[in-house]
Length: 215
Image (tube, rainbow, N blue to C red; front, side, top):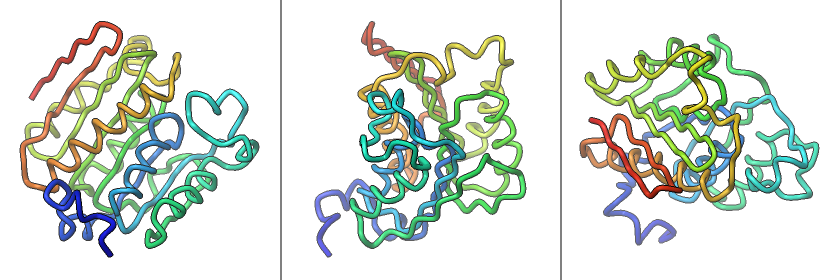
């Protein structure tokens, strides 16, 4: 198939074929990550989320009106299959647990610092590529752990809940900010696939047009 013909120099198919990706949290950012992963051709995708689609999710998360009251993992999984008929999607309609089997790529898109810490402590020695997407209103922060220095840096971003506003996705959200956050995460993923350096910590303020990058 030629569905990936125009991206092959950016998303190497041989490396992508070895990826088994897990998206934890299928809300605003996580749903967009899942759809973009399906579009670029990731062969295997696991979706973890316990929540169902509510009316307040329609505008900022991009769910369809026909998805109302459906489990988010089911609605997102169905859309991923429509995007890419070859993808294997496994839907896990529950909260993340330490006992869950995780493969080599993780996209963490949950809305709690404490859950982020739990996920990192559970999977950091299992995964090759780990991305954490955080969104608050028009501010996006993307963190990546894929080598020694970035793995050492990431735990320092797991600050206490009282400091979580700047890195939480529980505040105001929009579909366009979520799409940008997902795109930044996929860009770092594509760099990793190509063996290029990744940005371990970047923050984008859309309102002020400011981008801050830390290696």
